[in-house]
Length: 256
Length: 291
Ligand SMILES: Nc1ncnc2c1ncn2[C@@H]1O[C@H](COP(=O)(O)OP(=O)(O)OP(=O)(O)O)[C@@H](O)[C@H]1O
Ligand SMILES: [Mg+2]
View 1: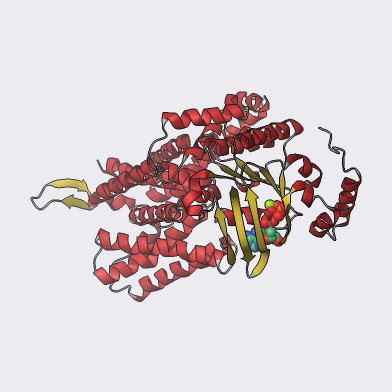
View 2: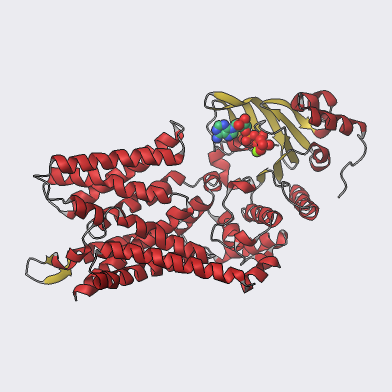
């Protein structure tokens, strides 16, 4: 089964294309990494999939349908920095947003919603923080709250923008475990990530971006020197990192 | 009795402003409130010229229309012309406000709208404009009814729209991803701000209404951790400003609306200093923060 299909997708800002001819099909039940250097269009790709930016050509199909027909089955986790964490709201308030729908927007929050939100907080180990104001959280805790909100949606497809940025090793581990649990339940997780070193351990499937699509496929097909150089080419320090990575191929370079 | 009516109207308007202003501040749009409050001026004048009276309804419509037009223009300059948000706000409202001023001076003869009155309001006249029914029954000042109706409407809006406003204010992209109409909530809020501004213009004036829209919510923002509490606290600060302003004006024999805005500012200062003092010694919240 295919979770996300893009066909000839092009997105431009001010007539300048920042994503060009993106064409891929992602399988369900896998963890997919979207990898590319800064400014390569990773965030833009997620936004295009979620219908948050206008596309200039091509289309996106999710579970073989248009976005509008399957919205309820998708959960989007924006970049953590995209919101104001000084907002007067508690952790619980934020997680409950995962239960908001167009249909229940005018209704009160139900008991079932509260239970689902508490369960989601439990999963990310943040239940004891549920009444804390969000401004009093560390970066890693904020990320957990965002993930709890996403879990509360009970979706089949999760689309996350840089969930591993600014979190410590323990939180990274915890998030990874959650992702693999989700995978076991047959869910699909698409994650924007820019650390090449860890990408190979974290993901089953990889989309390599650099404005245009360099490659997409199972990770073993993607982790080839030519492809990585093509995506990261011209950026010397990154290039040498790629070299290191290729040398140490079999090793898990990163210490946890 | 006069004092009662004036304070009542001041409080009703202050609470409406406090509620809406809280959302404006959280949306980082405080200056949009300022823009709307100025830009409704030509709407009011045109409505007055067209209807030839100071009837409330045409004025409300004229102002609400201009208010929404203002927000549309600001969005347009910001998104399409790619100006910075503060520049788009600056262009939009100064231009519309200037048209309003020109209209007033051009038609000064026909317009029984006093510039000073529009800008600074005259809440002292509130008790004079009575609503007397056809059978001759005295219902009290007309403005009290209008301001109560407005507050009722806004409370209803916030009550029904709490979740919609909450999610679109905190995280617009997430709301969009859920399929929630963020433009609807944006314009609904802006429409409410426009309405509030025009209802307030007779009593507190087009400029001082900005003080009530921004200062009490900003004061509440300093000390609150929860949106519902912020709405309540902002309303309380608004009411305190209305009370304090009335008696301050009486004491110095000055403008009531001006005094209300002044008291709002003083309350802000007191709260801010209190917070600074509290931060000096290790407080409970600081300990909470560390654990
Ligand atoms: N709102 C915008 N208006 C104009 N250009 C934009 C806008 N958002 C992004 N861009 C441009 O589009 C390109 C892709 O940006 P995008 O945010 O998708 O990159 P990214 O891969 O997510 O980068 P990062 O790793 O830094 O998060 C960049 O060149 C950026 O400058
Ligand atoms: Mg990005």
